[in-house]
Amino acid sequence: MTIELRNITKVYRSRRGGKKTVLTDVNATFERGYSYGLLGLNGAGKSTLLRLICGAERPTFGDVLSDVSISWRLGFTAGFNSTLTGMENLRFVCRIYGADIAEVSDFVEDFAEIGNAIHEPVRNYSSGMRARLAFGLSMAIRFQVYVIDESLAVGDVTFQEKCQMEFDRRREESDILITSHSPTMIQQYCDRAGVIEAGKLTMFDNLDDATDFYEQVISAR
Amino acid sequence: MASDLEQRNLYRPPFGTEWMAELRQSLTVMVRVIHAIIIREARTRYGSSQLGYLWALIDPVILLIVLIAVFAAIGRSTPIAVPLPVFFLSGIMPFYYWRGGFSRGATAVSANLGLISYPQVMPSDIIIGRTLLEGATTLIVFFIIINLFYLVLGIPLAVYFGDPVQMLLATAGLFYFTLGFAFLSAGIGRILPVWSNIQSYISRPLLILSGVFFTLEQLPSSFRQYMAYNPVAHQIEWMRTAMFESFDSNSYSVTFVLASATIALLLGLIIDRMLLLTGDEEIVS
Image (cartoon, rainbow over all chains, first blue to last red; front, side, top):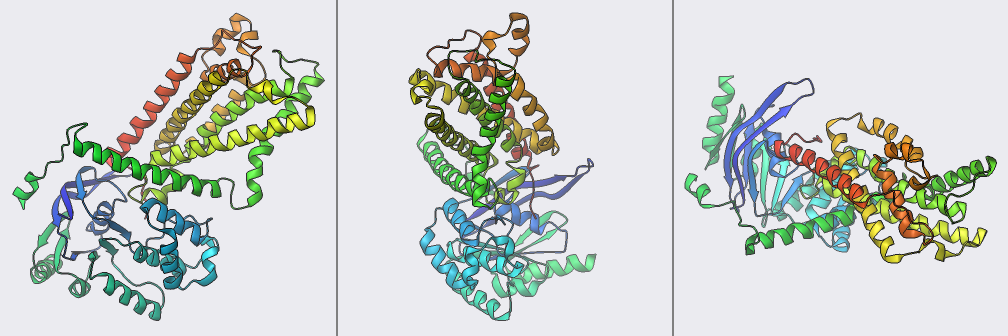
């Protein structure tokens, strides 16, 4: 087993008293050694499922079981404290993941290309710099599963190429879990895929079946 | 796949080998996270300026000076056999710690929403981290002030340490008391966002009502019976009895302090658990 979803239901409650069921009774197993794509239209529940998998929030009913280390969503920067410097934020993340601070900071300083700005408060960063710091950090701490919401694109073209190279190297030992509304991206990275439609997840063992089903979903709209 | 799911059993018998291993694992993570949070909070507690931390010292010193000036102006003397500044300090420090935990607890979760999205960071880690940091700050401020008293006023340090064993117990009690109310405050803050504005209207009058500048012992009994509902006053009286050899109050109850702390802690934990189980937590992006 890598990651197992058991009877997951997620209900959001709004302050005005309305309830919205985003995922209904989702069951799935994501096995180690395969990369998975999750296809779905906007609002189908892709991002919610991803947040549940990487532990950012908890399901209303059901369990998420896993025995691997799972990254935060790539490019996710809300975990940074803006009054602390990039380096202080880096140290914090190292401490909670039990990673070696010297090793990680060497890697990130080299990779993120933000120079001395790493000793400046994060609030002075551009959004591109934040994303580069977050991306470098998630590459430096070696996760077994990398989670990507929609896009891998960080920074300008040259930096994107660098990310791509680092990411391809990392994929030799790590699996990825990616959401998208376009099958092309899934075909580029994944071995298997699932389709989320109206809170239901259907898993397929090969990409073509998933793509066919997804196209049916789109045309049924 | 269905049969595969059934094979894996979630249940671990308590105190079994697997259960103990899981417990040890989660305790290790918890210690790691709390350590990281204390360092992070120490840097952000008073904003980004280095000078900001001085405020933790200046704030109680100003209150001390005001209280001493007022008592001198109206010609009142200390109600117990220790110098007036010492008497005030023995009330201000426990009160400031308790109030610090109470008010810092109110915003513990809302100010750290980004942190909660790291799966290993739990709201309770933030509350424990903040309460520990607040305690360490209070202790350091206490030691600085008693040394200032020694240098400026010539008050010997021995005055404060009447019964060291009792003092340790009273300090441990104060930590538990503060932690309990920090959990309660954090819990209310999470289901009632205006709480962070309201809580100071509760803690501010308690500065006057908790015996910072009087003792429960000296109050007439008709008055004391109402004051006795305030656990903070009991905690301060307990601390003073432990600190000063010459002061021995019969008007406080350790049981009451610990019981109210336990109730506050349980209420806070119940709210936390309810939010966790229903998944109705705060969400970032």
